[in-house]
Amino acid sequence: MKRSLPFILLQTSNIASGIGNGIVMITVPWLVLELTGSPSAAGLLGAVASLPGIVVSPFLGTMIDRIGRRKVSIYADVLSAISVLLFVLVDRVSELTYIWVVLIAVLGAVFDPAGFTARKSLIPNAAIASSISLESANSRHEGFFAVGWSIGPAIGATLIKFVGPVDALFATSFLFFVASVSVMLMRVVDATSETHDQNLPGENFWQATIAGFRALHADRALFSLTIIFMFTSAVFMPIEMVILPVHFERLNNASGLGATMTALAAGMVLGAFGFAAIARRFSRYAILRGVMIGVTFAVAPMVWLPPTFVFVLAGFLMGAIWGPLNPLWNTLIQSRVPAEMQGRVYGVQMSALYAAPPIGQVVVGLAIEGFGLQQTFAVIAVLFVAVALLTMSLPALRDLSHDSKQISVDN
Figure 1 (tube, helix red, strand yellow):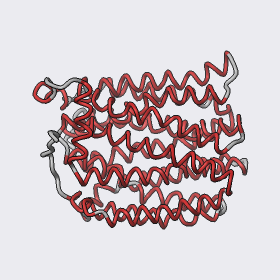
Figure 2 (cartoon, one colour):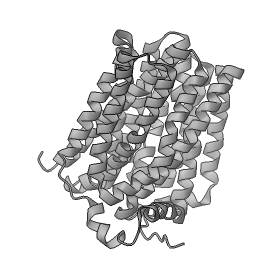
Figure 3 (spheres, one colour):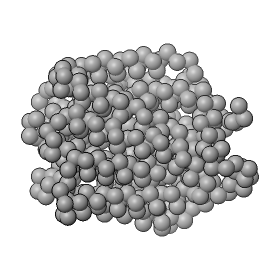
């Protein structure tokens, strides 16, 4: 038990953050729809809240490599907890308008990527301290995070029903504090501190950040995978953040939304926990292709806007197929990028992933109002097919099954 304590504490933080973000994911869009009744307003919120992640993520990656993974994780979760409490504070002392919701969501979006990225960077440290293989550690980490996501929407839907969307955010703030304290109690060797003196003494902060871009670009397989993730996020996130909330809000069915989101996350739990076993049987490239093709088929039944139980089943299937992707992504970075560069590469990839969904969410919100919910959903399904075809057509992705930490950033 004592030997496994670092990994247990990291997963405690991971689950707490997952539950908290799951509550936010269902609560804030619901709050916006109550305030405005506008799907495009909900889509715009998601887009604007993603902007800080685009700008700050590369610099957060440099901070992780510079000052340490634990410190960034601890501070980020404390600040996230405070930012969530602002929703409640403004509601108590003034009127919580749409503008206030946007401003607070943007503030919170500055801190959330830092905690998320720092926890990912801590996986190898906790795995080594607890004598767990990298594949198993990533599989469990993403599985436990998905557990949090599966619980969070159900808790959020219940809290919306009994205390309203604003007071529901008390729970999120508490969970972020739990996440911070858990990492604070971890005792691990931070790989970045071991390599700092040898690798970063001649670089200023800006040069160190640019090195992250160069490192990612130098690895053609990881760079191509980042492009795939950008396209996928642009079509996947609007389903969760706009289409499903709009559909179930029109039906006045918060429980249905919670059940669908919970099923989606529960499927991710199964898929993420299964990654280690899948990785022993299939190559990384084969896993990537399987995920992209499988999700394309899983989303198809939802396009017909079926009864809630069909949404729940389709959501679970989509989550189960999607689940291995995040631990695969983690393993690829950890096995192909030197430890002292991993924070920056994570940061650059996070920036790219934050850049794509805002566009998708705004376009989807406007398309729903202009053309209808079902018609918009059908176009998204077609885009999934396009992403699957892109995955199979990029030659560089075939190199994902080979490890490489010899990254040159000179050019």
